[in-house]
Amino acid sequence: GYTVQAKRIDAQTIEVIQKSVNGTNTYEGKTLYQVKGDTLIETIIGTRRSGEPFKFIENFERTK
Image (cartoon, rainbow, N blue to C red):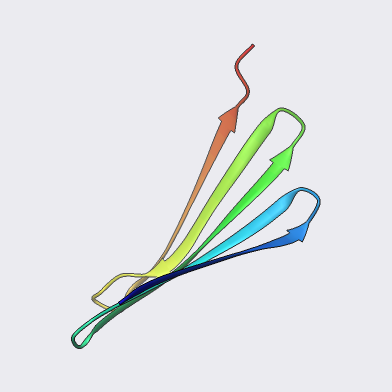
């Protein structure tokens, strides 16, 4: 199965937690979306199926 939960942390931050279970494989990941001025910061934290942790951070600037 696959589940997604989203909750507001504060006025600028939303946290999304994803969980996927496929037989014996389990994936869990968390994505934080933060707004700072004209920038949206996406931080993805999780564990690969191999068990290795990972973290990605991307910045998106508002186009005008």
